[in-house]
Amino acid sequence: MTSETIKIFFSLAHAPLDQSLFGELRKHLAALKLQGLIEMWYDSAISAGSNDSDIIQSYMHRANIIVLLISADFFDSQQCAEVEMQYALERHMIRAAHVIPVLLRPTLWQGLPLEQYSPLPANGKPVSIWDNLDSALVEVAKGIHQVVKEIAARLTGARRPLKPPQFPLYMLPYRRNPFFTDREDILAELHRSFTFEQAPQTHIQALYGLVGIGKTLLAIEYAYRHQHEYQAILWLNAASRELLSSSIVSLADHLGIPLPDDADEQQRFAVIQQWLRHHDRWLLVLDNLDDFPMLDQLIPLYSSGHVLLITHSQATGPFASAVPVAQMTIEEGALLLLRRAKLIPEQGSRDDASEENFLQATAIAQEVEGYPLALDQAGAYIEETQRSLAAYLKLYRQRQAALLSRRGRFADDHPDPVTTTLAVTFKKIAQVDPHALELLRLFAFLHPEALPDEMIMHGASALTGALHTLASDPLILDDAIATLRRFSLVQHHA
Image 1 (cartoon, rainbow, N blue to C red):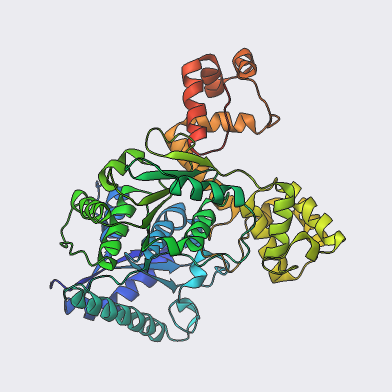
Image 2: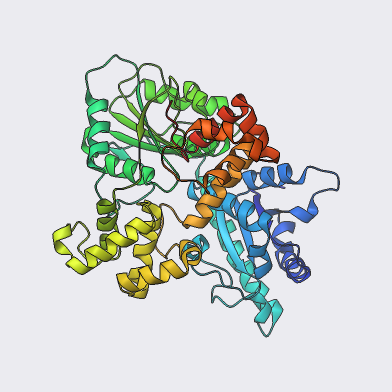
């Protein structure tokens, strides 16, 4: 096996037909394996008794290509759809792996984030319905081989000396949102704080708020508005140490920093920290940060640069100045909806809308309580279906859950719909503190404003199970509230 062997991880359901079709596909890829061009990994090859989840994650982290074998059973599998597919998309986003969807069997997959990727077979016809199965699998194998050749050529070329970066260098992962609405007070506060005369320590600010509230769009807007003030704008995915470490490899390449192939996390962090220390007029955005102590390893204590964190956590400790991002006002939300639905110009004002449209948009904004992700989804739905605002409002009141699960076709900065976004958040909360999730469920039955702590404590005797435990113990209750604040799901006032 040569050093240029391309590692491929296959994600597939355990359904017998999917396993059978994958077995046939492996036969068609055997020639590439015999030549030492590829190495194939998949969960059924893991030896019995091993920790499957850890090994699968390790395989996916090391893979150059991740092949998603699409079928109805694939989407019905929590492991495939919620774990492996999501991780594959994260790896692709930071250019750490190439994702290839392969259509095994007919299923509805349009509207999902996968839609932006080119599937195999190239004609979009699922493998199982071809008249000749071998012909279908040859097309799939050819498509995979083409990607293998491209990656191998890139890896070989990567050994050439790195060119020094050309400044200004702007590494922004998303285009500027033409429908960006309001938030002018937050943008002004960020800029005032960054440019205010200060001590020589690196200035770090954190945008915090509920998932889907618009923090990333704010960071993107700030970067575009003030790009003339920086010689470099850098962006890192900090959702986990693993993703951050992978992002740093790509960043080092853009900055012309030589980094050994076997560099560990500490070495990767150190080279970026050194670059930041010895350069000025830079803005570094760390997206989806939760591990604040990690900043000490990455950000120099003294520099003239600026760091903008995007986080769910309301508590940022000594690491950053916290800037809250709240729900939009009803009027702001109505304006965003009108712009996104293209019922007024991209940066149109209230005056550009008819009185009837503005009233209907206001009603929709009230229904979703000014939640930006839900408003963006509503606007996308109205644009794509050409429904009227009144018709959408009526449908939303009848089919709320269904509409909140539909994202729209053109969502590159936040591809997941409201339901998926919140479900992932709830799953994380359950992993951190199950009591917190129970408390959140209790809150769902209560009025959202000004809920006194004493009501929960005094009502402990009427509760059972986990709720009784947390309501009876102030420390457990405080821990649960702290967890919910970490995800910006509650505000707690002493």
